[in-house]
Amino acid sequence: MEVLKIIAEIVVPILAVVIAGIWTFFKLFHKFKTKFLFITNCQILHKAIWKDIVAYYDIHQNGEMDHAFRPLVLLPDSLKKYTSIKNGQKAVLECTNSLNENKLKVLAEVYWIPETVVKDGKKVKFEPWNTINHPVFSLVLRRYFGIERPMYQDAEEVNDTENWTKVNHHKKHLDPLNKSINGDFLQWAASNKYTFRYFNPSEGEKGVYETEPTQNNFIEYCGLSIVFRTHSLLSVEND
Image 1 (cartoon, rainbow, N blue to C red):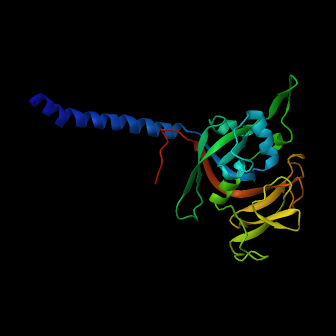
Image 2 (image 1 turned 180 degrees about the vertical axis):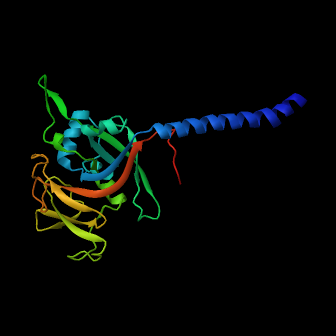
Image 3 (image 1 turned 90 degrees about the vertical axis):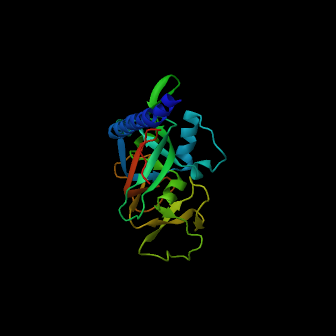
């Protein structure tokens, strides 16, 4: 009994300290080795690209609007050198904007936008989505990070013009989750912390950034400050 008591009082605490030290070492080593992707621009996740991504990867869906309310990020193939995230895995997104009192974090499901696909035994470009060079965020992520907000309660103009600017976007490829105006457009508010422009993936990046929405122009937000990293048990999370 005396021996067991000595073990309980001396050996067990020492063993606990050793295990804790080893665990801390691996966590810090993992943090040091983890690749970070710094996101400064993002585009919106719309039905047209999601339909093709779902068909390519055979992704399970929970209803037609699942892609809007599910934390989803699509990444272009060109960003693979900056992250080790695998297709279908979850990643940590962290807003590092210094204007926020607390940092915002969220887990999001990630899918890669392939540069090429195989059709009829031939490798072809995954058009038109292969021209996208920035991450694509679902609606819930854009609202969570305060990039945009709905305007159902607002009058025709944005009430808080110091912090928000109204955005018009063609409704052709979007779900009716924002205020409808003029028959063909949806309207919401975008944060003035960021700028925005319209991108047509069918034309690529050459001369297609515009200030006005059209049927195939999709909004792109610029000036973000979001860190993207792989999620794992060894991730070091701060409160």
